[in-house]
Amino acid sequence: MKILVCISHVPDTTSKINFTDGDTKFDTNGVQFVINPNDEFGLTRAMWFKEKQGASVDVVNVGGAETEPTLRKALAIGADNAIRVNAEATDGFFVAKQLAKVAQDGGYDLVIAGRESIDYNGGMVPGMLAALIEANFINTCIGLEIEGDTATAIREIDGGKETSTAKLPLVIGGQKGLVEESDLRIPNMRGIMMARKKPLSVVEPVDTTAETKAVQFEKPAPKGDVKLVSPDNVQELIDLLHNEAKAI
Amino acid sequence: MSVLVYTESEGGKFKKGAFEVASYAKGIADMLGTSVTAVSVNGGDSNELGAYGVDKVLEVKNDKLNTFNAKAYADVVKQAAEKEGAKVVIVSSSADSKFMAPLLAVHLNAGYATNVVALPQSASPFTVKRTAFTNKAFNITEISTDIKVIGLSNNAFGLKENSGAASAEAFEPSLSDADFGVNVTSVDKATDKVSIADADIVVSGGRGLKGPENWGMIEDLAEVLGAATACSKPVSDMGWRPHGEHVGQTGKPVATNLYIAIGVSGAIQHLAGINASKVKVVINNDPEAPFFKAADYGIVGDAFEVVPKLIEKLKEFKANNA
Image (cartoon, rainbow over all chains, first blue to last red; front, side, top):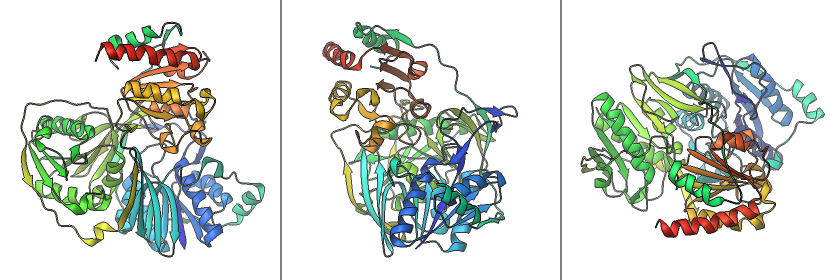
């Protein structure tokens, strides 16, 4: 089984978010970048398929040379090969088009992407990719087993979960639940040394145009101070929620 | 041309989110000087949609679509959009709509903006405001394609009643076997509990509750308020509560009217995930907990003393305001 895991290079979850150039660009100054958490759950599940079922695992990212340390980290975790599509990830459709080319050229059976990146939260790349390569697609996936050419997947739905089956090739929009937080792997020294020697190929993008553009950013308006209520007077909280906030 | 809205239903009834996307579609249609067509799949009473500004409902009745199937539903909405010559298609941010919409966007060659929180800022160029960086920021996104798909953030626009009436028309899209490549074999959904996505109020517990055996009061408080229950990331990582309850950056986003956090310290990832909620209340014994900086109302106190008192007083309040 050939698996492709799509990796987004995103600001660490604890990052403070600022903008530059008249609030038209994300300010990367002082920001630490990581593998998008939703992708990392998928990558870790792919490692399970590699170890238990002999799958090969490639990772791919659409981005400039500055994203290579994130791909190297994925190699250090255990992926076999990395591919970087040498282009700025301008919008979800553009990225999906690039990934579709890589997925088709590589003849992958299973493509795992995170359900969304934690930076732009577009949440559209896995589905668009599936539509472009005409593969089956399961989003918000929290459990995945493969037997032969058939996948059994658990999808998180509003208020519960749903189990479904689909033939490969399959695209997954993954998230926590594919593996547990405690299953995530911190690369060890041996992994990091090996990752330096693993192939990281750079391919040029296919010609396509973005359909959307983030033209301006804003930060939420600063919040007023919290109104504190005495723990001995919870009735006051109820009155505030009812009369002032109109929330109950 | 018209604005097309996909109005979701469950068990033959429209979901609350359906009325919100309908209200939003009416707002866009007014901007563009056109009408609103809804497409419903085994949906509810179309007259209900008229009350939120829908002019016409394409009613799809098909037993093959009793269980949600993203590809088949995308095909239905695509054919409805083509029939209506729709230039703007609106969907909600439910798990099902977010599953379906990327497929729809590719099939319509449409640009797709998710997590949109307001009516377009301008129609030409077509720009919408959406959340990004998990609610740590907004961005203004321009959609440059001829057809646009918009995913409206839950609870961002609200319901806007309208005095119109909707006409209903049977619609029979052609579906192929290729639409049913994914087969749902079982659905496990608590029907007696309100889901986080649909709830007006969410009550959330954190590590401060010390153990899963103490969740009774969280559930009791939720029950009094008709709220959904949620939890912080460490709580779900330790297995105290199911993953489906984890809210925050890597869990579920919450955009509810009232969010009550009990024993949740307020890590930046948690706050990002719940920031779109309108009113935030924190109960925590640590006055330095970061959540107090994000909350509207707070009680510095021991949850084990405060919450039972709150439940008791809320029961009185509910009895008096029933």
